[in-house]
Amino acid sequence: MREAGAIRHPAPDWLSVDEALDRVLHACSPISEERVGISEALGRALATDVQSRVDHPPWNNSAMDGFAVRSADVAGATEQSPVLLPVVDEVPAGGFPRAALSPGTAVRVMTGAPVPEGATGVIRIEHTDGGRDGRVLIQTDSDARRNIRLAGEDLRRGETTLEAGTEVGPSVVGALAAMGWPDVTVRRRPRVGVLSNGNELADFDDLDDVLAGRRIMNSNEHGLAALVSGSGAKPIRLGIARDETADVRRRIETAGEIDALITSAGVSVGDHDHVKEALDSLGMEHGFWRVRMRPGSPITFGILDGRPVFGLPGNPVSVMVTFHVFVQPALRALAGHSRVRRRTLSARAAEEISSPEELTHFFRVRLEPGADGGYEARLTGPQGSGILSSMVSADALAIVPEGRVGIERGEAVEVIPLKDWIA
Ligand code: AMP
Ligand code: MG
Image 1 (cartoon, rainbow, N blue to C red):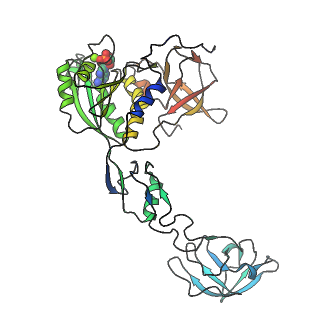
Image 2: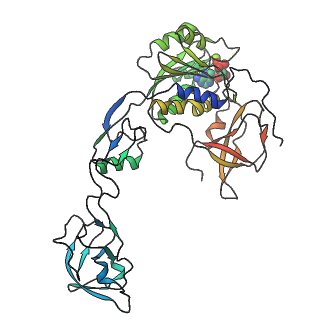
Image 3: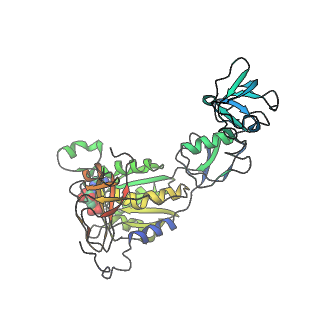
């Protein structure tokens, strides 16, 4: 497939995906912080640097069940000519040695137990006769300087630091506990208003109208609320505005305390533009109003009362794709994460994918294990922006960047993974 030439004169206000994302991220800074228990901090971002309150481990301890020795005492030990040492002490995990290790002796230690001063290594039990009757036969000296974990080798009091902006994953929860912190200061979960627009929409209280074919389900609100929750933020549902500027305005004005606003529909050209009109009348500063992408080109972004506002298109797939591309990174920036840009993977196209040259196209694909040990990306079926089922079965979004008219079968294609499991 041919590589297309340069883009032909895109309108200056019709931004590339990268330019648009840069503008979004530039406008989003971390919201306020709160102190929470470390298990409630899961998924949030540290608001401050956090230093260890302890040395960890607190003492030199054994990495094996075995015998603490001085290397000079076991030098040259083999199975044929083992070294016999008296066992003068035994230290379980939670116990302490009675004294320093005297030359020519051994101390039995369990994994995690403090090793006596003077020991250079712990001979693992498999390299001995197991020890009995107050003595042990050391059958190799290979551990003579091994298997001692040094005090403070993992965490150092006042020194080891988790940096502000770090995401609190399970390992960070464990590290915070090891550092002696029962609670921690993290950024709040952003409160995100979600507003639908359109006279044709109904929710479950008017399900009969939907079942009778008179209206369509307000699926965007439910999908968006789930995307917001899945991004670690709190959705605030603002319901369905009618296609009237005043109703859109009223719902935004009465939203209460929110950190960001997402609307869907009512922003495309040819629409009555009630959402843009309402946002303008409320004094929104414009960031951009369209992006060279498909699906999702008619997306509005701006700042209203210091808060980011995303006017997403109405089509359900456009909503989801623009959320993944722009809104989720923005919500992470608000939530104080230092890493906000999505990870991509390289896959091979399992079939030819063709795309308009002037737009970055996001295709819904399934990922399958490929012949070369990587992934193969296969389209999930019809790719229309109203076909939500194309999204349901998608493992990833395959990106055909602007300037390309497509990807040939077998060619590499960059994908944004949406799921962690593929088989
Ligand atoms: P619009 O941007 O208002 O022109 O809407 C584009 C398409 O998305 C239309 O087919 C709408 O019916 C549909 N749509 C708009 N809002 C929603 C919603 N909340 N849930 C599902 N579909 C919607
Ligand atoms: Mg509409």
